[in-house]
Image (cartoon, rainbow, N blue to C red; front, side):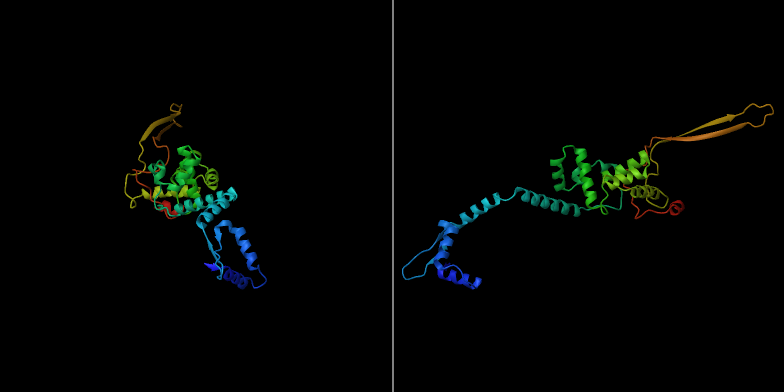
Length: 269
């Protein structure tokens, strides 16, 4: 505690110029703190300054001052804090870039791919489970474009390439953050070829789908006057149940090549 005189001396020492008189200082303190400040007066002694019920006063004053603040400022602060927490969780994810996702990974539950805080956010914003999973993985891929290979985005790129065989379409979707790039699709195709070559990863030989070979003969000008100019040929075609390049063979992930290889290297292997 301080006496009124000591408090006045402190003010003079800090300001270094003309300040309030002691009586005016006392009035200003009473105006500021009201009945919470007390000046015990004893004849022949200096007035001592002390406070009562200050804890209640400070908490009450803090509540009213926060209530008067702009709600928008607090909203921005809360959203920024939530975004930083979600970004930190995405950065801490362990991602396997040595293997491509299988069909089981693409259809896996969100809890195995998406971090908890991002799941909570998307559950509030997006009611559809499919859209929620896709948008969550789009956010993750956009946050870490070089260190994450989101299963749904990867599967969509392979499907678009098989259905339309368009480099432009795949790259446009990738530019919007909806799938991986066309370069990644080509690397995936090369990885499949290299992983099922003799001397490489062992497993069920490609393709695993059922294939039926159909052969038939063809005859042309079988009857001529001189017996010349006739043609007899044989044609063979194959029919398969495969709908394209499988996402996984034998339910085993495809090893991912470190980078794309040239046609000469692929052909020689």
